[in-house]
Image 1 (cartoon, rainbow, N blue to C red):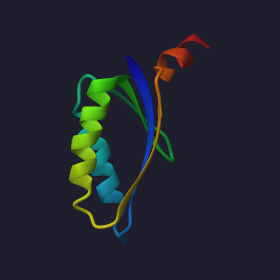
Image 2 (tube, helix red, strand yellow):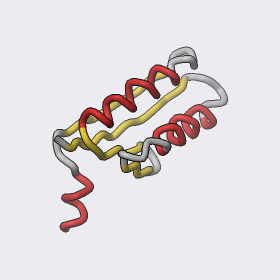
Image 3 (tube, rainbow, N blue to C red):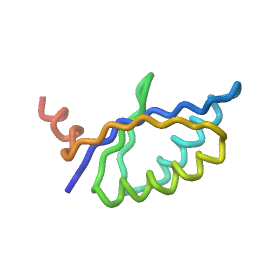
Image 4 (cartoon, rainbow, N blue to C red):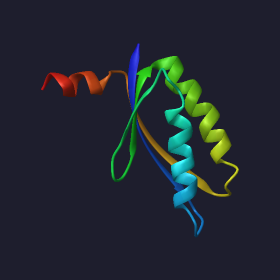
Amino acid sequence: MNISVEISYYPLQEEYVPAILEFIDRLKSYTKLQIKNTGISTQIFGEYKNVMNALTVEIEKSFNVPQSVFILKIINSDLQIHSKNN
């Protein structure tokens, strides 16, 4: 099953941008995922297990930054495919 995830990361520290960029770069290293960045979130597309395994690993790494907040929306459909058809 393919899924789509929209994720926003808010490291609650003064220098927050480097932590966000590192998180996105780490996600981009997963070759089985498709990553799209927007101004307010990152969108992730791929097979359920691949996406969730990557998020589990990378969110845990990001929790090294005290008080890191993640907001996720997950849908059991590949919205990237749907947007290509429109």
